[in-house]
Image 1 (cartoon, rainbow, N blue to C red):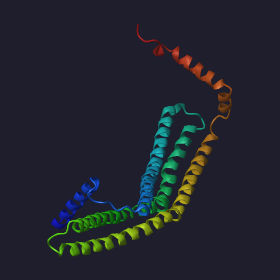
Image 2 (image 1 turned 180 degrees about the horizontal axis):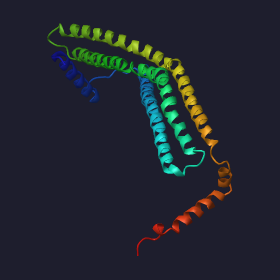
Image 3 (image 1 turned 60 degrees about the vertical axis):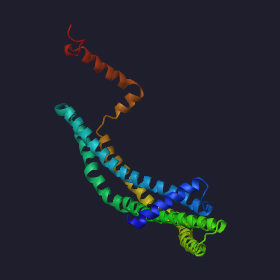
Length: 263
């Protein structure tokens, strides 16, 4: 920061302190304040959307990778005792294809149609915040000069040039502030209103990509289901499966190595 910029920052900080003590009157613009609050709400939502959209893709990869590890473990767990139709092998193949093919195919379109548009939208926020910051700084300058004019008016200085100079500086500060204030007051609502038509295509793409992932996952696992014993579902519904499991557990308990342990 330059020396000139440092002096301005100090003066503005002093103005803010005097506002709190009532020595400087603060200019209030309700219309602008409402639009800035609406912008802040949208900014927070958009940044959260960007974060969660990236998190969804990461979670998708993590989930399919976890499915693959489960399938590998299940297949190894069965080993040579696998059923004659190799159901565990088909399951492993299905989830590996879901991980290596489906997610890989969706990665590019998801980034292009969802992540990148949302990121570009959020990329405007730093510039807008800089404009808001500049507007607020110019308002502090204007209020400080306005207070200076009022003070010189109430208690005239021996230097007759001081008041006209202060009035001129206050008028220039007012013009700069009002230009920035009007621009933001007019354009912030336009930006907020554009959020829906801008994000609509990404929202549609998000739904379609999620649908495709779910459909392909269902189709691949449905092919595995044909190798499963159809009677298992009925046995579970009627409580027979629980009894079968308990029978196997009892057989395990009867083994000496699964007893109560060494005396």
